[in-house]
Amino acid sequence: MHNLEGVTPRKQHTMLGMSTLAFTVCFAVWTIFSIIGVKIKQNLGLSETEFGILVATPVLTGSVSRIFLGVWAEQYGGRLIYTIQMLLTAVAAFLLSIVTTYEMFLVAALGVGLAGGSFIVGVAYVSRWYSEKAQGTALGVFGAGNVGAAVTNFGAPFLVIAFGWEQTAQIYAVVLAVMAIVFYIFTEDDPAHKERKASGAKPVSAMMQLEPLKNPQVWRFATYYFFVFGAFVALASWLPRYYVGAYGLDLAVAGMLAAAYALPGSVFRALGGWMSDKWGARFVMYLTFIVSLGCLFILSYPETTYIIQGIDKKPVQFTFGISLTMFVVVTVVLGFVMSLGKAAVYKHIPVYYPHHVGAVGGLVGMIGGLGGFFLPIAFGILNDLTNVWTSCFMLLTLLVLVSTLWMHAAIRRMERRRHPQLREEIYLSDVPDQPHPAPTGGGDARPAG
Image (cartoon, rainbow, N blue to C red):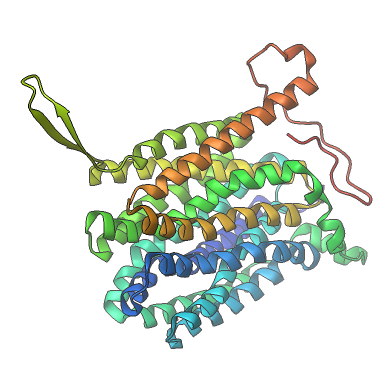
């Protein structure tokens, strides 16, 4: 563990606050296509599948970039990498305003997607400022920067109405560039990076950083994140289109209702971090998956017309469907538990892999982000194939069911292996593994749980 001597609470709060603010701005830029994409779809006459690809393209870059951004943050310090990443993304966001074809929008969207890579840089940076017992809460606060999606869903429609979508992209670019400069001025290198520079030690090689990725446990964490984060990003981008198409709302109202989903899916991440510190990340994951299953089952139910035989043998017809009010309420609950799950997943990483936060967190974030890439495309394809609006929630129900069963099976297997006397018990302990010493040439040797 790095030395925190001389690090005051005030300094910790300053670094955490600046990192969270920067992540909020980055996340707002990352999800900009959820709003301007609707206008582009109308202007270019895109199909549902083409629209899904456009919305998902920034997520692809934001996902894949997390691997090398995480490694670079470990090697060269999160402060420098964070600043460079924001400046490059600002340039790409400005370019959105001058392209005209669908193909060029896809290219520009790839550049904007770098904003999504900011998450793992911030995780590596923030975790270095806190002790192990406080990292869950700190990373939960940082992760609340997901609220940037709500900022875009709520504010961008009004900017589009007032200035046009091209000028909206330019405004976003300027704000992000200013944020990069402010961040660099008001932050400093993390303690671990300072120690390495003072000692003259060389950064850990990329190959050693990636060594823990051989552990199946890392990939299981990544699968959980595919839903709690990937589906969150996908729905934050997809819901404005869903409200416009399924309920006939205008874009401004659709954006605000989508923000109602994204807001609790962001700000309560800090609560999820605190709950993970207090009651264990495993408990929070069970809570997330079980409640999500209930919500998604309700959302999956399409508007259906029933014809039954009445008492007098005459047909009786009635229609059942989810009202707009019920839909909004259930999505808000879903967003809330997803925010808890996001914090719970990342609570594991600094504890299990303290010397590989960037690489392991990068992989988990990449897989989660790929959920945000593939799911909107899948939503569009399902709409085209089934012509049923709720098909997207049917897919997510299946995803959560598989994840829940896999997690429970893995936990039971681990407990039985660790405590043979519990083979017939149903209680699942959440006692964490004992810390292992830092690796000398390989990854952390923790058991896959």
